[in-house]
Structure formats: structure tokens, C-alpha cells
Length: 56
Length: 202
Image: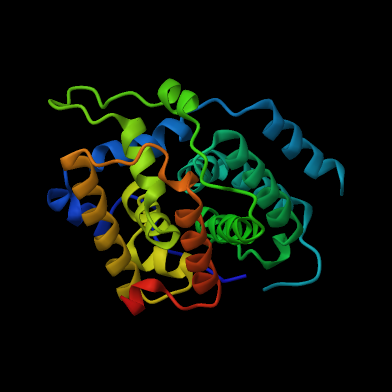
């Protein structure tokens, strides 16, 4: 698996610099993503996460 | 990488960080494969793999980037096994996606999602990582295991394609369902898996 660098998190840096150049739909793309991030977590995931612990 | 076994507290940290990135994994997966149920299956698969590989995670590095690599690999594998056919679940999209508030000319986000799904997979993932996930080009390049310039080129092409589609309204209804398009996508995936980006070719 590729190791990742300790990069700074998320939404600053280069992506932010591009902000002005973004086309009109760009905020929609972000919203598409954020709308899923903001969904309540389905029970299936809570079950799975609690099972991970139980296996050890 | 450290010793053989993580301490209980390290394992608890790992579990907590893994739990925190699940919503992001779901969002990335939904963008990649279009259908909410399949995306969630993919995330569950990635979570199990991440848990099994936790010794390889370096504490202090980005859990989101690390798990995205795992998710992406699971996605590519499943795509090659023909599990996803780029099916688009209109109902789910209509329910979840609403036009951005206050936007003068609302773009229907279901249109946007469908347009996104017509992009070649490697451009779609590049755009998702940078334009939606907020990763820097460098981070996206690390996740996709390619050069920064390649990511920039993919994002640029994806943006141009989406802009063209959304501006002139030429979004295919269900384009990925047609066999020719699907075959083309699978061929591209083979290229991606072999490490030869289409961006380099074209």
C-alpha cells in the first residue's frame, strides 16, 4: 500500500488558490460530496465497526 | 513502520480515525460508482481491508488519504470484475441532491452526477479528489500513485468535459449503460491498472 505523506489536511493550499478559476458548477461538485459526508451513518457501518473490535 | 503489534491505545486511535473517515469514504465511493448501495458495499470492503492492514498505517499521516488508496484499489478490482456497470440510481440522486442554495442558475446536481459518471474513471477520480474531496494536487497524485502533472492534466480535462456537458446540456441520459461505452471504460481501467494513464497517451 502506498504510504502517504503527513500532508496538511484538506481544503487549503492549492485547491483554495484555484477557487476563483473554478467554473460555475464547481460548488455543486463540492456539494455532491458534502451531501454524502453529512448523511447519518447507516447502521450497517456501525455494526461493521463494532465487529472489527470484537475480532481481536 | 513500528513493531509487530500495536498497543491497545494505538489500536484505539486507529479505530477512531478510521471511524471518522467513513463518511468521506462513502462520498468518494458514491462519486466513483454512482450507486449508493454499491458504493457502501465498496466502503465496507475497504474498511475490512484497512483494518486488516492497520500495521501498515503510519500514525500521524492522513487516514483519509491512506484509506482512499485502499478504496480506490478495491474499486478498480471490482470494476475489472465487471461488478459495477456505471449504473445510475436516479431516485437516490434526486432524493439526496438539491440545487445549491442561492445559486442563480441552479445546476441540477443529478445532472452533474450523471455527467461525472460519463468521464473516464481516472479523470473522474482526479476531479473527485481535488474538486470535491479538497485534496491538493500533490496528495491526489500520491493517492493515485502518479505524477503531479498527470493529476493536473486529468483534472483539467475533467473540468473541461464537465463544463462543456453542463453548459450545452449535452448530458447523456444513461450513457454508461451502453455496451460500447462500458467496454471502453473497462479498457481504460486496464490501462490505469497497468500504470499507463490515458492522459499520457492523448
